[in-house]
Image (cartoon, rainbow, N blue to C red; front, top):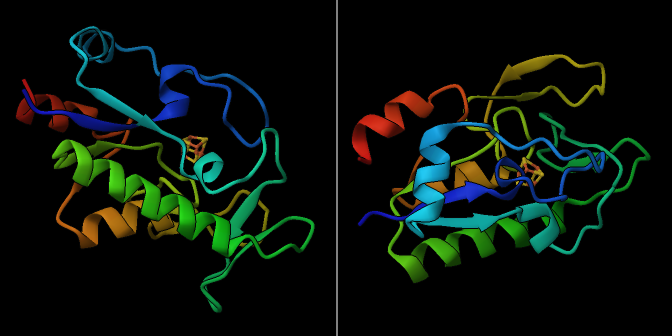
Length: 151
Ligand code: SF4
């Protein structure tokens, strides 16, 4: 049975930067969870950041991740990304379902670094590291494609 790495916030864990619990409500996710196929991770918490925490965005020019107080949190984000990759290796995972737009988990779009709610094409650091290691990353927007592959 194929296992799937999943953003912990999709499973209702209180890990989001704003401390708001927002589970992804989908029957297939519940089924996979019951079957023990989901490996949960929040890369930012795994990297040592607290909940709640200041929102952070990737700065496209420097490739650093900086929060809205000006603190460079790049190392914590990278540490969390490596932890997510380790989990994939440990469980033989080839597919991930990660939250779109996050500076860690976004797989197609992220915020542009201005903290003005502007999105650009790009990947979060965890999604990028997984992709570089042949793990296909899906989001809540492409869950249907993942369902077709993982029965
Ligand atoms: Fe969810 Fe990923 Fe953000 Fe953690 S880092 S709260 S798992 S989107």
